[in-house]
Length: 235
Ligand SMILES: Nc1ncnc2c1ncn2[C@@H]1O[C@H](COP(=O)(O)OP(=O)(O)OP(=O)(O)O)[C@@H](O)[C@H]1O
Ligand SMILES: Nc1ccn([C@@H]2O[C@H](COP(=O)(O)O)[C@@H](O)[C@H]2O)c(=O)n1
Ligand SMILES: [Mg+2]
Image 1 (cartoon, rainbow, N blue to C red):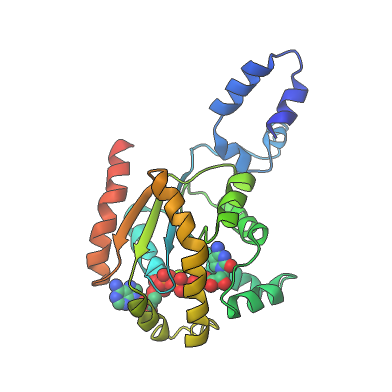
Image 2 (cartoon, protein in one colour):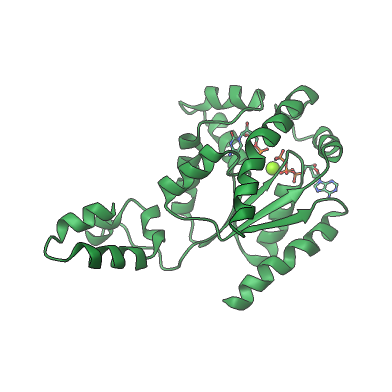
């Protein structure tokens, strides 16, 4: 997209363009593009997005804590799993493939999931996003960076013992096709093999906040609260 701007402005030096492009809010790359914004087709978003990825094994309490974060800090909550389940319910072209993948505890191709997240972000008036259950794999992570063009500000990791996660999922009682012992075992294997490397990646980047996800919901939230409170103080 930046190249497209450059081709329109051949009289301006490429280094000036590169500097200008890097200063421009990356939020713009989320929308259909600067060219369309210039034509007035799309209004540019006003604020820089603040992105939090919410990671943890199945049943670690991501969704539960996201509700509290939304209530307290006013984020928009985008659950990748919920968006995929919505696709199944809407009987879209990808619905059957997504259903089979979820039943198997496997990971849906990144492009499908990122496009769903992108659509929700574009539709939202909010600029603070909690992206729950994503990225689950390195492929998810790279795909988000490539398509959306931004990196997370914060990555939360709800660290919960497997035994507790299995107990919670089996008691969840929401009628999910993947809440059975056979699929949970597969999801835990996928989490260890594919999601932990993503968590380690963000740890090395200094963006990871690990939460001990045992205790009551309120006790766990008291570990989460200061993380976002600190960002609010910074502005
Ligand atoms: N601290 C807690 N103690 C006991 N049960 C909890 C706690 N937090 C959440 N739960 C319950 O555990 C179940 C799983 O929680 P939740 O749906 O938030 O997990 P999740 O990480 O989003 O799981 P998934 O990845 O499968 O979507 C829910 O029934 C929830 O009510
Ligand atoms: N990035 C993702 C997120 C989820 N999935 C699939 O959905 C299932 C349920 O996800 P939850 O976050 O609600 O637990 C998950 O087991 C995957 O099959 C995905 O493919 N990619
Ligand atoms: Mg969840």
